[in-house]
Image 1 (tube, rainbow, N blue to C red):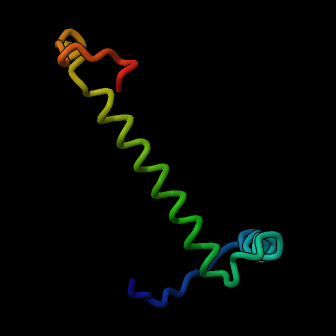
Image 2: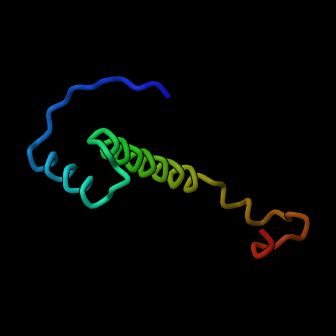
Length: 75
């Protein structure tokens, strides 16, 4: 995956958090790796919201269909 350099301004407390996180979690060697991890968590949260919204749109009448004799325990 290609990387793009980004310049941003963050509050000092966020910079301190990033630094502390790197110290506590040795897998993250750079500020960028911590920020990338945080962005991936945000993406996951958004994806979960989208799945929940899509799930709420499911036609509940599908529950009356016969799935070749399968019960929910079989799935």
